[in-house]
Amino acid sequence: MTDSSSTVRVRFAPSPTGYLHIGGARTALYNYLFARKQGGVFVLRIEDTDRERSTPAAMQAILDGMRYLGLDWDEGPEVGGDHGPYFQSERVEGYRALVDGLLESGAAYRCFCSRERLDELRKEQMAAKQRVHYDRRCRDLGADDVAARVERGDPFVVRFAVGEGETVVDDLIRGRVVFSNDEIEDFIVQRADGTCVYNLAVVGDDSGMEITHVIRGEDHLTNTPKQILLFRALGAPVPTYAHIALIHGPGRQKLSKRHGAVSVTEYQEQGYLPEAMLNFLVRMGWSYDDRQEIFSREELVEKFSLDGISRSPAMYDLDRLKHLGNYYMRQRSVADLTDLAGPRLVAAGLLPEEAARTRRAWLERMVALEQERVENLSQIVDRVRFYFEDPTEYEPKAAKALRKKPEVGEALVAFADVLEEKFDENGPAAMEEEARRLSEARTISMKDLCQPMRAVLTGRSFSPPLFDVIAVLGREATMRRLRAAPEIIKSLGGGAGGKSS
Image 1 (cartoon, rainbow, N blue to C red):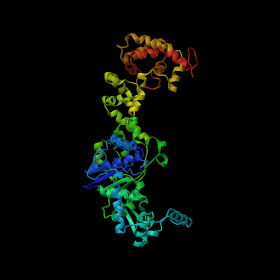
Image 2: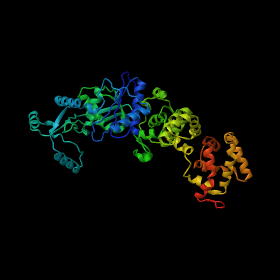
Image 3: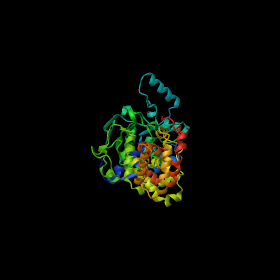
Image 4: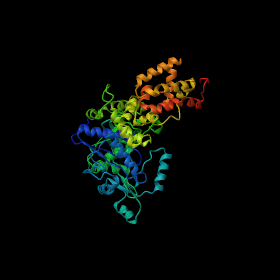
């Protein structure tokens, strides 16, 4: 197996009928890396001939998803190139010219069979337990007969005349795959309304764009023999094929939304860093060795090879993405993460846009406290929300900590009194020491003091180090929340002298 060529041209050809799917994004990435490794050209082509389902929004989602991942294309929409147009809808006349050429050479023929006849033929073949296929009735019609029917305006489709023998796909991933031509019916290349079908359009595009390697999902493998036959009939070079195993969900089920987000846009909106997504995508089916798990973009370009792609289905492992998300969040500087999180805090209504600039140091302190614990930027927004808003809801464990010893409410009020005068002078360590003194004086363990204190201040049972949180939260919010502790405990079903639950 080899993937070396001095004239490599590959393409990613999505249909703008929906979001950029995880599987499509992985295919785009493999094409991108192959092209970059070989010093070749990466083409983005949009297969938008499905007018009813193609939408500008889906088109934009594809472009945005590609840019989010850093998969910059050398030719295609918004970039141009010498092999355009790069939208199938703008190449229709070229497809018709190809069909005319096939008819003239005898590689294709007009089929006048009605829908009713084809339905009846199908029923007969099924009843006889035969393979359902077109019986080539119109293949041997005389030229005069064909001309007369066309002159009368009889509707027809154009079918490709499949010859005898076999068609071989020397696949760079799957190896040698042999298809018997007996199993390939005379397939339609042009519909009765004059529009061309997928296989003809793809061959026309790949030939016109001088594509040398077609790297795509294995669900296209059954189309490949038909496309090879068309390339040969048109006298065009046949690309080298590489078909990637599909991505499966848990239990080897077809990947769907029940297994988690399957749109690149969703992960982008959640705030996963592009580096995490690239490593997540590339490792679903490809490996370099038994040791290296994480790769920079430069390392991927250097080390990627089709030899490393497995023939077995890849598993969609959301836990791995979470691990990668956390890893790359930890690699970024606090300043970078604050730059990225700031606009999200503004969009969430937590922070005025001006404050994102004027309170920069404060924002960096809270981001630094959460950096080790988050997987994406949305989690930062969620986890720092309590700095901006007094909690109105309490996690079950946090509420339980408040109800456990209702009398702790008065201790928290006392702690507020202790802190108030020296809040600005006391750092986290000094605050913790004051808390220890109070716990000893009131014979309350530090655990029984700090767990409800965290709950009152954050609404949560877990947070970064409590006294670091207090230092960032600030005097005003800390005093207000601590002094509201008795009422909060009462509202949660606790009260002085109440039973623990």
